[in-house]
Image (cartoon, rainbow, N blue to C red; front, top):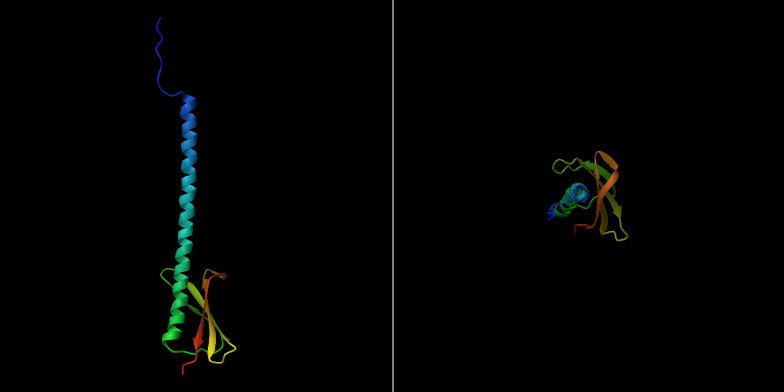
Length: 124
């Protein structure tokens, strides 16, 4: 009597393959979620940089020599509600002032997103 050889996969082999594919899909979904949250953080940092740079360029182009002190003002970018804090400090050289612009998210004011520093020279 001749025995026919059967071809195909057993139920156990199919279940093992499904577990492997499911694990790989789960890991890839976590990676995509992580990339999305990183993308939001990078976008926020870029918008905060633009806000701080806008103020520093405004000082430079206006040939301002800001007075020493601290002030806050809204500096929204797109749909982000940002708050800029400008602190002007005296330097050892009386011809220079140190201007620090920090940017915060209005919804989370304790967390500083960015801080840019620039030296400003007194107009001659």
